[in-house]
Length: 339
Ligand code: 3IO
Image (cartoon, rainbow, N blue to C red; front, side):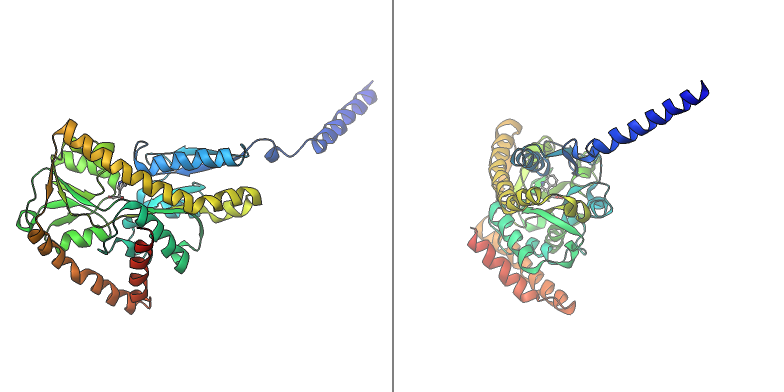
């Protein structure tokens, strides 16, 4: 009796071993799942481009890849994005380089006041800049896209009609935009975009300096009734993937993502440029926002104050051993090419 029982148990054991080895490995069963983190809320442009990329990758890999998106800093926040992706907290992350200006020296040069005309030219020029120099800052990740905002303008609770109106006024900006505000005599306050609504509400800042699509997407037009057109600088962004995760992907999936890099960068620039136009129209029509254009004479005073910025950047970066003059010349040439 007991012996029969033991033989039966051994049989079940062997059978289960057998069926286990015959079954496909569980990893091959479902699609490859990737986690994509983003720092601002879902309706804003970094998340709109994230959803577009997700849709295209899922479609072009015929469902072999499935991407879970995490907008609004739910997986990683603005300043922790790069390190979070390197550590593998997220597989993919979208970051704004202006929040870590000392970390992304070469790519942040796109935020110098060099007259980048729009987000499409900025995005493609930034891609070219990255592609030419392959900066060490990105050595630990796979870069999936690079893009910029449209040129920045002042979104304010008070009207700014001349330089004197800016003196000592607290305004939010990061990275290259912060240097420009300082040159104009404003009191620049640094923080990532998602913290800006509260800073405006509490009166910590009287406005912000960024691209105008946020008037609609963050509803800043409800608080900021004045826009002063300055049309400089752009903010640079990157989308990066954990390098081990990238290396683990099948070749055909890698090809889909590689083929999307420039296309996605351009798509985002074009989306941004169109969305800025929509946002200005909405702000004027629905929110009674006044758009202030500086006179030629007044604008010349503002521009004059920006002249030392690029010269100083070249001097500082040369001291760090970077080919700074060449970088500036390249950015101008790339922007012209993509105009
Ligand atoms: C930006 C950041 C997050 C969501 C929408 C946005 N539009 C422009 C920016 C640029 C930026 O990062 C900033 O801090 O102004």
